[in-house]
Length: 396
Image (cartoon, rainbow, N blue to C red):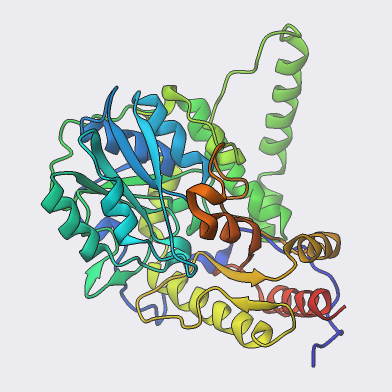
C-alpha cells in the first residue's frame, strides 16, 4: 500500500551539485564511455554527433540511418552535414530491428546510429558485423549511457565512434563527449569558449544545487557575487536594443533546446565540468542510480495501467531514468505534472514525418513511455515522496 506521510519536497529532475557528490568511500571502479578510447570533451552530445559525422566524412548526398524512436536533437547534426536521415524500425521492446536496418542500407549510406536507450545497451555486436560487411560506419549514441559496460567492454567501445552526454549523469550544466576505439581524434582541435562561458557554467551548476537546498554554506559565501551577476545581467538587458538578441554564453542544449548551433561545434567543455568529471566517482553514481531504479521498480511494478519498459536491470547498466510504459499516458502525464513529479517524455514528439507507416512501435514508445528520475542526488525523502506521488497518480 502506498504511504501518504511524505510532505511534498522540490525534487530535482536531474543530478545537482551537493557535498555528497564528492563522496568516494566504497565506490567500486566502474567503466565509463571515456574508457572506450581517446576522447574529446565538448559541450553536448549533439555537438559530439556533429563532430563524429564530420570525422566519418558524412556530407551532401549521403544518408545516415537513425532509429525511428529518437531525440529530435539527433537530427540537426545530420542536416548540418548536408546528409539525409533515414529512419529504421525498432521492435516493441525498443531493441533495433536488424532485418529492417539491413534492408535500409544502400549505396548512399555512410553511417548507422544506434541508441542505447535509458542506459540499456543494444546488441551492437550484430550491428558491428553488419556495418563491416556493408562498408558503413557505426556511431554509438550513448547519450543515455555514459557509465556502464556491455559484455565486458566499456559502453561505446564497439562503434567507430561513440558519443555521450555527461550532463545527464554528472551534476554539471553542460557536457558531452566524442570517443573512438578505432580511429584517432588528433584532427579535432577544440577551442575555449571564453570567460563568460566558463563563469556561466560554474555559477549555473552551483545555483542548480542551491535551488534544491544543497550547498548552503557555498550559497551564503557566494551571495554577493551571485547578486552582482544578476545585477550586471539586468543592466545588460536594459542597455541592449529591443531587437538585438542576447549573446549566447552557453549552448542551447544546456537549456533543453533541440537545435544545433554550429558556433559550438569546435568548443571545448568548460574547466568546471571537466574538473567534476575527474572528482566525482562514477562508481557512486552507478550504485545509487541502480538502487533508486530498483526502489522505483519494486514500488510501481504491478500497479494498474503501467509496466516497466525493461523487466530486468542487467549487470553493468547505469540507468539514466526509470522508463515506464503507460496504458493511458496523457492522463498519467497530466496527473504527475499536477502533483509536481518530474517526468521526461523521450522522443516525444518524433521528427516530422516519422509516423506509424515508418515504425508503429516507435510511435507507440514515443507516446506511451514516461520516465522518472533515479539519479544519484535524490535524497531519501525526495525518492520516498516521488514513489508515493506516483502511486497515488496511478491508483486514483
